[in-house]
Image (cartoon, rainbow, N blue to C red; front, side, top):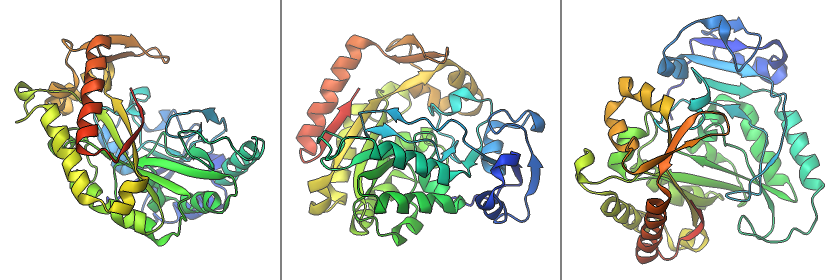
Length: 351
């Protein structure tokens, strides 16, 4: 795992409960600075985007404990346990909404767990099976952060995992680009679904900044399944490119090779339970402008106006995605390739 050693801890007063104090004590050399709001951070002035990810840790209290319907990789999206990430993936949707986006850990996990318990116990039971799970209500616990990173920072994450493991009606799911072997010490009993994010390795090295390699993620799949996790994969984002965009092969060749690598890496038992989700790239104008200065080679793959169309997001930002007619062809191509190479891997959803 990355050596996360923050130089400064920024904390709101309401975050310094017992859990918050315990968390802050893990970094005795860090300077503690009070802040009014965990999501504004006006007190610290200018700091480079990537420097904030490695040097700052923010402790806050999540006030809005909304549970949102999903229906894709989970039934619901649970209140966030954290926000932000150590990694600097060039396409990250969480980074779009903040000038800087350091790891923010919410210390009121007991309130969050109580909210989820209240929510799930209010749902009809037995549950009607659907594509997210045949038995349990599923809650995504990592939409705004990478829980595999947060697990080593906040003891509260392990407590949340244990809450879902013990719950009679709920299970947790999260996607990750990291391999945290400390998580193998748990006994999830198939009540935690980890979704390893995969893309062609050469592209990942360019756009998945400061994450574990694709090779390392593939090698971990069997280990996590044998430890009791349900293990799925997440092909996201799918980036379309050809030979003239700074890579040796086109996207179709690279994804066929990735599927073959996955097929060779995982055991028969893993294949029997694995499903995937597939999300084609959506990029953002402000991210593009930022990346031109810090990672221009990535933008040769991400920003392709000839293939993309503009869409204004619900937050008011200018996003670009593959043109509707072209994307339909891309989706058809992806499904055909996956079906030919790894027919045992079902597609939960694709868009």
